[in-house]
Length: 259
Figure (cartoon, rainbow, N blue to C red):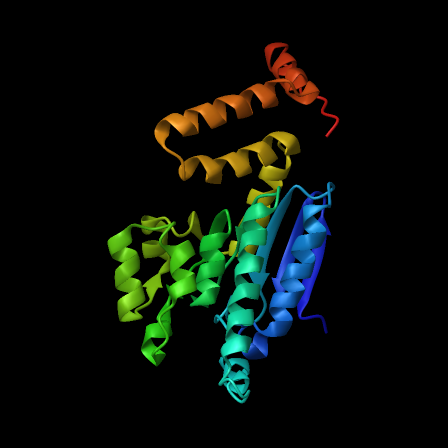
C-alpha cells in the first residue's frame, strides 16, 4: 500500500496521503513521497492543477512525534535529525509554492501543526464540514514556529498569534472567515477536484505567470509590484495563445489553445 496515492483525471493530479493509522502525519516517509511527487509534477506539462487530501479520519496531524522522539536517541540529542527534518519539511512546502500548477488542499477531520501549515501553504483550500484547524504544538511545549510562517501569511496577525499561543482549534466556518480556507463543503474532496478542473481549463502558461507573480508581488513595495506585474503582463500578451484567446473572445467563439 502506497503511503501517497496519485490519481490523474484529465489535467488534474489528485494526491491522497495514505497513512490513516498515523493520521497522515508528515513522517520521514510521507515527506519523501510528497517531495518526489512534487518534483515530478513540476515537469509534468499534462497536469494543470493539483489536489491534496488525506485518507481516513484526518487530513494531517503534523509531524510524526514518535519518529521525533526516536531521533532523540542520537548522541547529539537529536539536534542534527531535527534540523534535517525541518529543512526537509520546509523544502516540501516551498516546492508547493514553486509548482507552476495551483495546488488545492481538501482537508477533513483535523489539520494540526504542520498539517495546518500544509493547508496554509496550498494556494487554495476547500474544507469538509466539521474540519478543525490548529497549531497546537504549544500544548506539548513545542511552539509551532515553522507552521507560523504559512499561517501568518494567510490570516490576520492577532488571530494567528492567538492560535499559536493558546493551542486552541478553530472550526471550518471560522477558518473560512479568517481566510485560511476558501470554502466549507459537505464533500470537500469532490468540490476541490471540481475547482481544480475549473482552473485546469485555463491557459496553463498564463496561470503559471499568475501564480508566480501573485506571491512575488505581495512581498514588494507598491511601486515595485506594479513594475513587476506590468512586465509580466507584457510577457503574457506576447503569447500566441493569449492572442488567440483575445481574438476568440472578440469573435464570440471558444479559443483554440496550443498549450
